[in-house]
Image: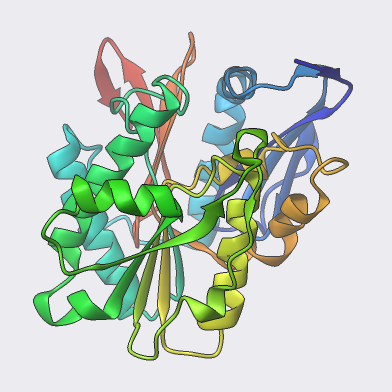
Length: 308
């Protein structure tokens, strides 16, 4: 695991960027707050999470300032969910509100190893299987019977589609598809290029892309799908547990992953975060939470209770 002299850069979604100061390393771009400090970091996910948690106080102040500046209504006050049943219902309500407002590109992000967990707390395959099951339950809530055959669910690769049909999506009429095909070099992180325009049918109205983060090329294919099949149409796209904060935070150094880093300028700013839970661990732990169209909220965890 290499040690790089690379700045710690953390991006967090905010409501407004006009009033935020650039003091203490606070920078805004494309509707996201960036907290930047030059430090030497170990390039792994848990290190990034630990460093994000140290910046929670900055996020609290910035989120409060953004909410006040935007004048957003606090009438739409959604409590932090007590379990995944309530979470999925909240995500359903948030998504339906966004669809009514013609939001075309949406993000849903929350931990799957427990409501107090962070990505990486569970084994990767188990987290993906959890996301798959939650996607099925989410679709059962959101997709009406007449929309089932017009909805296409994209999984990271063809093998995931086969597994989905034998497990969580057994008996479902939802269209299942994939972003990449496994190749001989799969163990080295390579897959076969799939032309996304060939995967789409004229009757498709909604694309839901499940957890496209294991292979760095997957999110690039998602952008291709968005450009070729969503832009300029009435179609909508939802990215479900894509761990986009890894791209926003600089987890993938731009020097080695220039195309992925470019998404922070070209693709991610177009996205509306309709449902989001990010836990911060440690002594100053808490939660960054949003359910569209409500405000961003920072919730402190005090003696196993959540305090806004």
